[in-house]
Length: 153
Image (cartoon, rainbow, N blue to C red; front, top):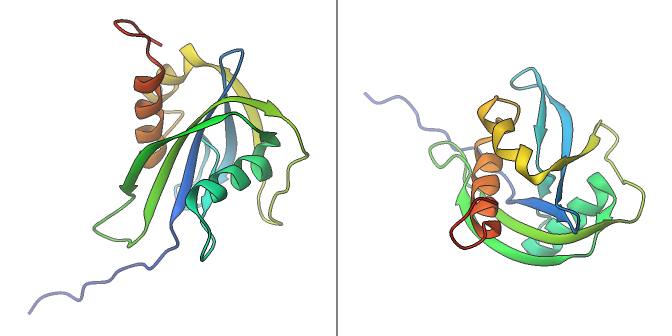
């Protein structure tokens, strides 16, 4: 007899790699109880029912960081945990974001916003500071888009 198979039904998510005109990536630091650590990661959040993923990404960036604007480009979508969850993560690169409105955090969110130079992002993955698998995928896809022809970003 096989063990029962369970699927976690979750809303889709939007993950943003936001870069300022001066080349800083806007990250958020927050406690993640499931893995009991303070994670440094990309702004991200759930897509509301009926909401366009790009609209959700813009909303989440504004709510979590206060940054707005910029030129947005989709980086693709991925199944965040296809053996367990039924949702998709939509990844976006936002170039030229600017500080704007105050953050609008949920009552249980405790987020610190950090601006990190673009050149320091990949080393943060290698050092284990950025640990979310979908966040790491978004970082690597964004860095590939930002890389000048024939060189490092």
